[in-house]
Amino acid sequence: MTERSDRPADQTPDRAFDRAPERASDRGSDQPPGRVPGPGPRGPDQLGPDPLLTGIGPAGAGPVVCDGASADSARGDGASADSARGGGAGHGAAGRGGAPDVAPGLAAGRFRGVDRSVQLHLPATGTRTPWLDPVGARLARAAETIGWQQHRLARVALCWLVEPGHRPLGALVRELGPVEVLRRLYTGAVPGRVSAAAAARLAAGDPVQRALQLAREGERLGCRVVVPEDDEWPVQVEDLVRIGRDADPRADPHTDPPILFWARGGRRIDEAAHRAVAVVGARAATDYGTHVTAELAFGLADRGWTVVSGGAYGVDAAAHRGALAASGLTVAVQACGLDISYPMANAGLLERIGQDGLLLSEWPPGAGAQRHRFLIRNRVIAALCRGTVVVEASARSGTRNTARRARELGRIVLAVPGPITSGMSVGTNLMIRQDEARLVSTAAEVIEEVGRIGDDLAPIPQGARTARDDLDAVSTTVLDAVPLRRAATVEEIAVAAGVSAQQVRRTVPLLSMLGFVEETDGGYRLRPEEKPSGSPGERPSIRG
Image 1: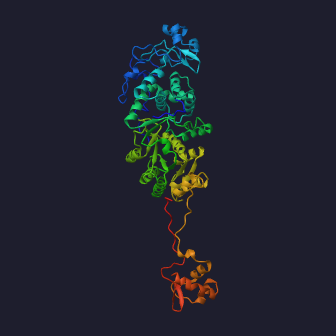
Image 2: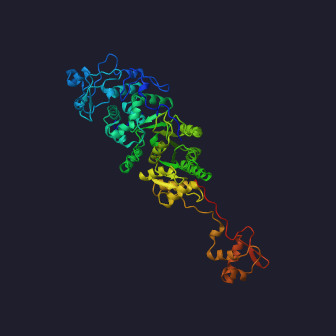
Image 3: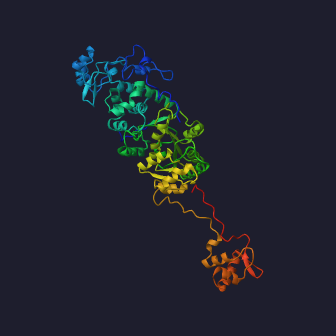
């Protein structure tokens, strides 16, 4: 991965990702209870403990020391002495019967390879506590094993511990960095909402070991992990911070920017999202909806715009197929791990997108598609794109959630109107009526809204031009007065047209020369192929 030099370093069952927490009865008799169990035996679908992670430091090396605590250890100060005696007094408030600084299992030195003379400085409390830093050393060895930097692997661990978009966690990562946040999750030195969000999975397995498993599985699948420190990170997703300022953290906690992306495909994310439009809508789309969607997506991709959608049935699938038909770029943002084809009927389509376009997800391999994850995912679709086009949506469609996120981000929201008799168009028609979206019907109109002002103007739709369009007002009036089935004299035409007979005598020869009328039986009549109202023009293609 290329690092930026200017930035700091449908329910389907999940597999390893959403496994229920390990019960005490599942552990061996030699495994004591604790907040974070050590790397003991795994289930049949887990990798065994990595031998590189069972030891803390290189063979023959001394204890791993963090934050300059070696001097205190060497002096054998009170904290170390208490630790050596096994009194468990800890340090500071913990020794006086207050809340301990660390998880019980960690304070008692229950990890393999624990050197209890090591002390860790905790920025949250300003104290030194006599226990090993289980993340720092283990994370360093794990990252070295696969050639990653620690902050990247720490983000993978965090994306396994807490559902994406969690605002309290995101704020903490921006303030302290992912490695320090992971350390504090081990010790409990994090805000209660973050601790509560991570508690179940923190008790279910070692996050560092799990992150290493996920990194290897992602590599096997041909996926890459993209983090904010990478050059290809799409900076526009950072606008999601705006939503968090006004949203209720208890009712709507998952609005923060992603902490990473799992990506599969040969395109860079930032380049794919530079000129991108989201095309979303109902899964149970009508024939009208899928036709309009495919035409829109084809027109957008044909003009060099990236089409972003969610890979689902209906409008999403039609949008991806339309873009691929134009040999354009399309991005599918999924609400599950990239090893899962959801829905299964779109497996072939998703595979093609992974080859010719780009697949993105915030969830690691093994994470299944769950209802709440689609709502979390929608904010990313809205944030990646300059505008969101809603083609069909029922009154309570989840698609309107994507449109709402786009409005909250200040993005352009567009909607295609539909038949008033169709339940699948109630949502889009309502959005237009309530000024929540601008009406569009062609790709050119979409580009006019999201493109450069003054440069990407859509042509005004016009009917097919006919010879009648070049006639002056008098000639048009006279032509409309000429009958089709019988001949009429000049005087009869003048009376019917309300003009003088002299004007008729000057006009009918011109109309005859142009092929509109013919002279017969001492009068004039329309030629059989000419219709009084002219031929209606065809509606231009929706590709615009």
